[in-house]
Image (cartoon, rainbow, N blue to C red; front, side, top):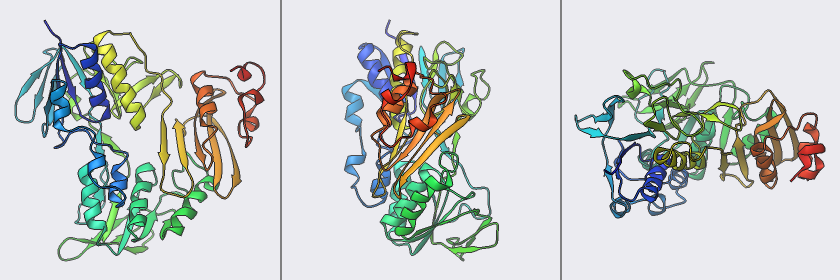
Length: 413
């Protein structure tokens, strides 16, 4: 009898799992259930669409024929509301039950809402789905001024969208630097200056106390905790994700901020796996639990999960993720876990070239490169091989760093 696989979520993790399952088990029954109304699209490129740099067509990755060609049942606009691990079923919002032999949860998250007055007003946007990008593009093209809240990787996308659409903007940040957990003020100032050049002004030690609206409940003003007022007929909010763990209620699937998995992407239930944003996986490189839903990481997790759904223990997840930003005249890349570690080293080489490495227990666990991305391969190699670089921090940030600059075993290639 053929195996029955159910995948909840049609992001890159879920779609990659389906593709791998079909390759591994040609006769299996495979079903993907998603609450979105369209098949897989490129989350990386939706910002370019909202900026007006790309049409819709290149954003879509799969059309419905892709699933038909692989004999994968795709259930769109379907929200899973209940999981029964003992009965091996999931239940959708309309009461439909789906039986499974193996289940993959690739359910991601939803944008965190800003808990202030009028945060649901017309003209206030979150940025996560393709439909969000469509709504943002439609609105920003007619806007006069904007406010962006959220000093992270999605927040910088929103700021870049307002800049590309030539809308004057204020970028409100709680601290004194953009992405302050990964960048020092010196490194972040490169980003700040690039924003200013594009008519987006960073505002530090700020945030939003409440929004003001007009008689039609359209946003007009953002008021920060200091009482400063910022005109805004467009507001973008990106303050994080709430991971979709509510469907785990009533089960004994282990989770905290995300679903716990081992290095094979399996949960505490032998027939239930997880992949993508939702996972708190055992990171073999970090030696601890980690959560990373970057596109490449999520894609690999989906593939690894599928292989282990077919043959548990066959392949472990060992990955150094990367995230690049292409909004400016200089490149930007983060890799691994740049916000973690118990030590760090950084260096600035010019007005647009800077790098920082996060170190834990003497080993590189992540970093940020601005301007020159050429060292990334060497740093990732040191990460993957868990090379001890204790006492050699300054060597690591030599502008022309080479692996054989390191002493002893670290120099082995």
